[in-house]
Image 1 (cartoon, rainbow, N blue to C red):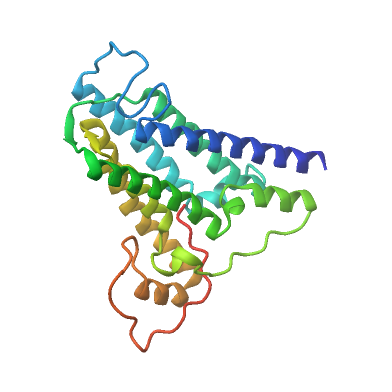
Image 2 (image 1 turned 120 degrees about the vertical axis):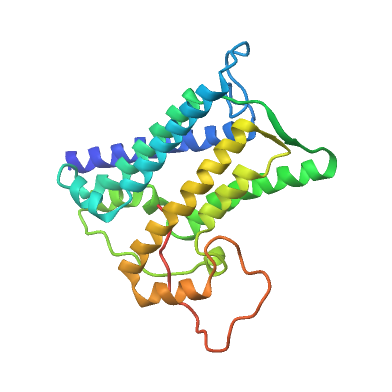
Length: 263
């Protein structure tokens, strides 16, 4: 029981650090409230060399990308669970991802050179799309299993001493029109801004490239788990851009349940 409580405490702490990093990300990307954001620095007199800033920022984003992708693979999960309880595997993934994200926020070098700037109704529309993106990202985690995605469900199951049931295949709400609404939400949040700087553009471009590459690995894993069911789902539903116009062909059938949240 002591070990089970320790697993639960570990999961709660990991989730708490994730929550802090997510909330800081809102201010970081949007230049709201936080002392250091994507375009501002705590030391307002400091001006990073653009070349140095690009190298440091790319290294920070690469560190996050490598950790995020490698730890999401099934082979790494099998290796990790040789050293930590299986119920801690997801919490460990969440904890390290969150800590690296906080490191990125701390060490980020702003590059404030303007790329575009819009005003008036266009600016308000972009701000609205920006917050819509964050809302889609957050809501999509609850459309599947938010607490499983961030390791809490596994800890509570371990506390009860029962086995974790396998994921079912489902397509709730936004998953009916796009396969990866979580990533779609992030892309909207990253790109929709009335004041795009060189540093923000670097952040958006690098993360877009990472998302497009990472989703190829994610799709491969989902096909390995769900087989023909996921292939049929992939044939019918776009990856990131909803098919707003066009009709389903008559031969298409409703998709079984899908549990394919990007990792």
